[in-house]
Length: 436
Ligand code: UDX
Image 1: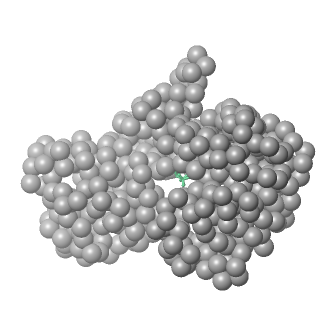
Image 2: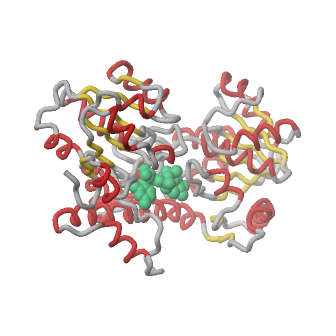
């Protein structure tokens, strides 16, 4: 099939590349000429495991192409994916201007039947709006389909190639059949393609992400309460998670969720509710609790360092919002670092991938270490914000030798409390016994 993907951000790029991998001819459109020229030369503009291999293979096979010309893209594909940004407005609602502007162009340019697919996370009713904008300009037949993505950063290629489910919101049999054909190679294992109306598909995405954010947040509150009563959240989690109605995943407490999806989607759903006079009280609380959770370790660090952080040296491991990505959007590390800097602390930081992005916003207010151990030299405490694998089994004796004081504040519960006690550390994590 011939596919056009408009927008080569994270979602568009993964979608385009993975669709080329199953033999489709794909053209990706982006207005950023520099980015397009880099991609034409085989450079993947984001860090995402396995994407580079697929990217190179499909460019070589001439199945994956890039252009700055929307016109070219709109003539090419019989299916046109919209993978455009829907940034958060000041009030938390999603800004649809990119999606609607491109829709207008689509209406003016298309000459033959096309299926327009909303891949971006968009509020309920967007497919209807896109349809209306195209219809006002179009002279040929077309359909608009909602097809939300459920890609996790760091696992996006795998999630695309082996999805647990595919959601298609469509009220046209013709468009539904085309989409089912397009996705059939990805669901050979029997996972479902669930077809529903466009509005339900749009809401499914918000509901899924808001539910997951709520699940994490609930666990963070349980963890905070564990600390008050001397219970151990790891044990509570294991006990709860083995009930299949609850499930083991997304029950890991920490210093809050971040990223480009959860924070934005939870806020957008709350705002969308307000617009319809519906007050999502749960989401209101989730946002509040998560905001507070990001700095839950701050008073503990302060207490340990004598309630005065001026001139205190703190090492920070992990800056990305989660492992296996260089993405720092809404990363809890940012909130912690800002709070620590405000209190006068000096921070030396290390992350395997996210340092360039952090440098762009923090500049020389931070010291950037070349290695995880380098960051800890002479530090009064180590703070862990992201659970990269390389932080999981450090040489504790070496660490002890490097740190000024053997103290670890662990926002991701990486270590076994007893082990750290035996190694002679002060170890403070989330929802577990404190070792002082
Ligand atoms: C998420 C959804 O999982 C994906 O389906 C969606 O389409 C896009 O948003 P992503 O943002 O890449 O994906 O990350 P995810 O792995 O879901 O983690 C989100 C945040 O939750 C991270 O900050 C992570 O650290 C945090 N988290 C996750 C926890 O704090 N505890 C957990 O148990 C799981």
